[in-house]
Length: 106
Image (tube, rainbow, N blue to C red; front, top):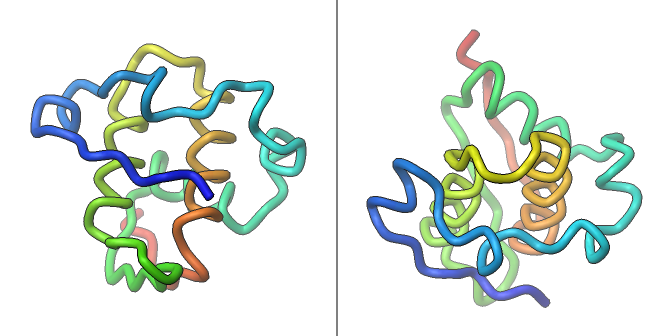
């Protein structure tokens, strides 16, 4: 299992160390690169529409707040290409959470 990383306020504003936070492209399973998982939809909705009334169901031992901050730091970064960010964030969400429910803002 991938470990949730601690991120700072600066990381949340400008993105953190992508080598530490984002899995390498080669390590992301193809299903997330293809973009057809529920987690890819969550990432896309989060990025393009915004989420509200979110209820994360974390896997055992996962701190939801830390996990969401980890993902948010990746999404805030300009460093990786969008496709890498989406696939990597979707993969990480699948590792950190059992499920999620939410509404979109837009």
